[in-house]
Length: 219
Image 1 (cartoon, rainbow, N blue to C red):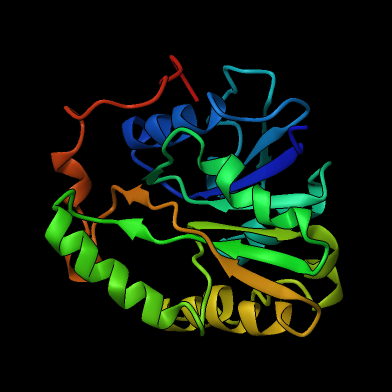
Image 2 (tube, helix red, strand yellow):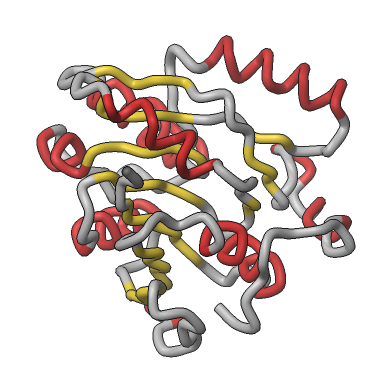
């Protein structure tokens, strides 16, 4: 049977075309009784209206880690799927991320990203991700049990004074804490990050002509 999930998407001054693609790619594969929680920054409260009754729009204090905490706290389901607003999720991705939770010892799953659409470059990046998988889980492509997030102290919003500190808390330290209460599994289910790779932020501009998975008229 399909396991209901709560998908949590922090959104801060996002490109709405890109965000619609991210949202559309998730809505077409949400299991029954699932929800997509979009968490906005304070200055954006009231700026978006959900076009689907499975979407819940919330506001949180400034910062991605605050958004993660607010969305996860409000989640109605036990399995939390962590996504970003600048990433497209292929058909079947949610099911692939949730399947390992049939093992009660699994408390988290994580997946790699495709950045360039070039098989050789992305294969090289994936090899690097495999090497790093023992130390971190992806902030844009992961899932975890809500009770494990609560039991291990949630995300620390005070650790977001730089991008490096944010990544350390959201991807490295969070995985370490989860592993004190269970197993974190790497799933070979790449997602497509439209926001570019590291120094190449802004590569999303080359994407709009590519096919997507069911884009709604509005978020």
